[in-house]
Amino acid sequence: MTDKTFYTLFGAAQKAKDRDAFASDWALSTIWDDGPERSPEELFETCGRVWDLAHLTIRDIREHLGLSQIAFATRFCIPRRTVEGWEARGTCPPYIVLLLARAAGMTGGVENE
Image (cartoon, rainbow, N blue to C red; front, side, top):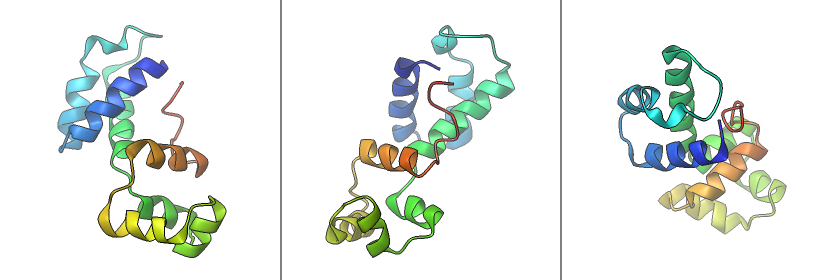
């Protein structure tokens, strides 16, 4: 998928509450005119993976890596208190979550397929 398509889907996924409804709606969208033909099932799965990325938390990423807050903060050169705040209040900007998910290998090839 193109960066523009990913950007559109990621932004919409952040606002969507229901994963399956989001994936169903977007899998049938005309947004997919940007590449090779894919089955509705493949598009549904891709949309679901984008929704999952849009709803990750810093804690999800940290736990995926098996790191404590201190080790996570050290690995990514983030102040420990910032990591604590992000986890406690859920205030981490989505673009930071996405960048950290990429660094942790959690994007599952969704972007730039």
